[in-house]
Length: 448
Image (cartoon, rainbow, N blue to C red):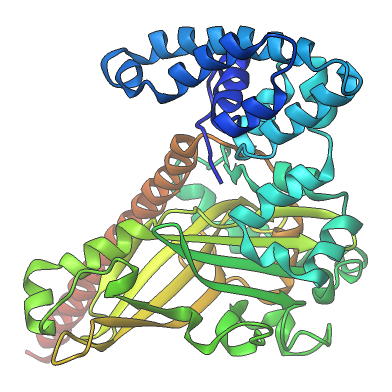
């Protein structure tokens, strides 16, 4: 399938894809009533690589515009075969089905014909299955249809979550909140919590490495969260996807990466510890999508940052690589700090290094989700459900720069909070030491 980046004009997109899909044999079949010269002219343009090499993109656009005029003449020449409207719809559909999501959305705004055809669910199903292979499953297709269809699903999940309300650092806002929030305020309204069921949430997860899918998982519900008065309410929220997700219709080697997938070969872990080539390639090439769907309210959102936000080499063992994704989620009426971080952790382990007949191989060992507040404390299961529900309706953006800015702002405030907390602890330590010395001197004075 061929894709174009968004931002092209509607005429350019139209003529470009006509140029791609119509071959010489197709033109030969379409030519009637003296259009042979027009066909030869088009074929000359089709074969003339020099035009595309030596002229810029704007001159190429002019050539495509000329091609569009030729196609119009050809369409008029075959009007005897069928109705003009029918033929145009077939051509337009063939063009639009080759577009990626952003370009298809842009093309839908170009004209009434594109707008009408772009509402076809099949087009958006192809886009979703190409971007998220997990949506090819029949149970997932039924789920997406029940929450509004593939077009709505793409509109909800392609933009990433951006939280523009990360509070500026003010120590007083955080040091006093245990006294300002009583238990009822901290845990929220029980009636509202009872309306949120862990079984309503579905996780649709896809991992890619350099455009190759290495893992696709679907998890229905949240494991071990059956009771509302059990451990789930107050224990730290965590989902270990590889532990609980079944391997339905997937091969056991789907989470294996090797040199044939684009990894650089390494002769030993000592060499990798020095140059870090394998780590850099893995960090730059890996992509994660973790979509959460709430079946009850029929909303979905992608909680991943798509590209890694950070990671650790050789931890906790020499052969492990931890890669961190995530997003900053609003928690205004849930947590005193008003925001929370959704942390998605992926761990790969080197199971083989380069040797006699053996390739460098990595295996996906862990893929998990957890929630943390501004102070780094884990959020319990009860509050995490509130945060997940609120995240499904928060602001999103296709601009990845906004996503990074939001995450960087959160990290900045979090670091300032930790530094201020350390300064206060140091002052308290010094005060305790001085108090101890003063007490010792006083005690010695009275003894003497």
